[in-house]
Image (cartoon, rainbow, N blue to C red; front, side):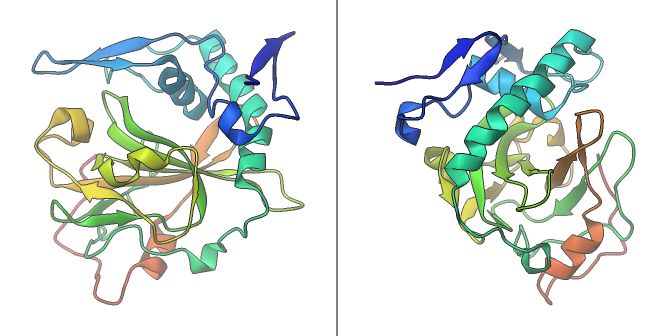
Length: 259
């Protein structure tokens, strides 16, 4: 079996290897870690999960708020590792059509938004509220990079990757946070179509909902693109979500963002 090699600081994906032969995420310099939940349970994080977290955020605190921030070196290592993975992820996405933004589907059924955008520093995303058990869907065709526990704040999370369209330079990363990811857990590494079931709105277990525990059930939804400095940052998605959500779903004037 041909495997992923590291030489001279670069990831090498052998040209003869099939996708099944090459790991989706090579951890690079990142090792395993573990998260201690409020009730004392411990969640073990394998190196690829830690590496993906560092690829997605250079300032995020893996162990939750009020814990140590990553060093500048760790942040830069995450950016460089992401840059080395993106060509391979793009090749796995293949020649499939990218869903136009105007055709994005609603990520959640029977959900609602706050009356005003929740996009702000520290929350480059939107919260979509819905009763526990409501289904969460992929709004666009995407490669599933992760479906499982990600960090103390996030809990269970789905991460999807969409390559940059021809002639453009910025890929998109979709994240769906605080959900039960059971329906899509076995499909990590696959390209799924828009409308595919990803999971369900959850509540009541910190191992699933992270810092959403005890709050109004919701999905923290973000679409991130790369900034000039190499870090990923969520784009504004409130208007996009309003267009995508079904006619039955109204913006509730008695709800407010909770995170």
